[in-house]
Image 1 (cartoon, helix red, strand yellow):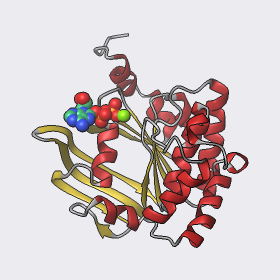
Image 2: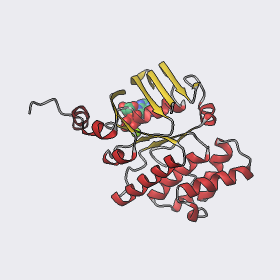
Image 3: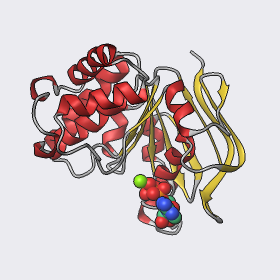
Image 4: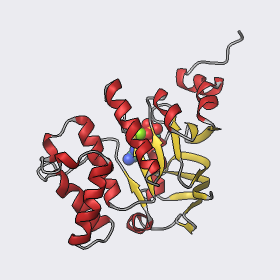
Length: 243
Ligand SMILES: Nc1ncnc2c1ncn2[C@@H]1O[C@H](COP(=O)(O)OP(=O)(O)O)[C@@H](O)[C@H]1O
Ligand SMILES: [Mg+2]
């Protein structure tokens, strides 16, 4: 299969502060591409550059055959990039179903009638269907994370961006998230999954990228990346030691 996304030598940041430095990687269609790296290394910023919240000062981003480097965020969304946020931001007073319906109507440009079906499908995939009438503000953290994913699915993405969906969850809940990500991949979505809980990534990803200081440190099969000494060092922040 071809690549659904390519970053080529991307520089980007906030104002004059450059966070991403010469970042290059590719995501294959239909895969789960994991992204790890220490806090503050630029993982969420990479998502911001990808969805067009910040602009690139150098380099090129190609999505699904389109050069999206200079496109506006809503154009990118309509092309099929759906993002979740690290901190879920549902409309607390609206029901679970209404939250996803809003995403479908506005993000995917659906009529309300079509949007209802899209929303119900998204709720089934995220196992929220039975809770669709509950107010979003009453959900547990795990269900809020599910809703965050359902809202992204409501925009009918080809590429789904998951930002630390497992953070703050118990070990058992993390297993639920892994099962859900596997279901999403089986349903045909391409996925980029940022997670700080690195053990989570090995069994659920096809490739893994470790970032350090806004740049790709290592990309490859998940296990060797996870086990590599350079990755261990950037996490521990230790200098190379002789053994
Ligand atoms: N909106 C912002 N304005 C300025 N600096 C930011 C903003 N968001 C993040 N940063 C900075 O960018 C760097 C990378 O942050 P981030 O991409 O959130 O890291 P990660 O997701 O890997 O933990 C950090 O130094 C952070 O302080
Ligand atoms: Mg982050």
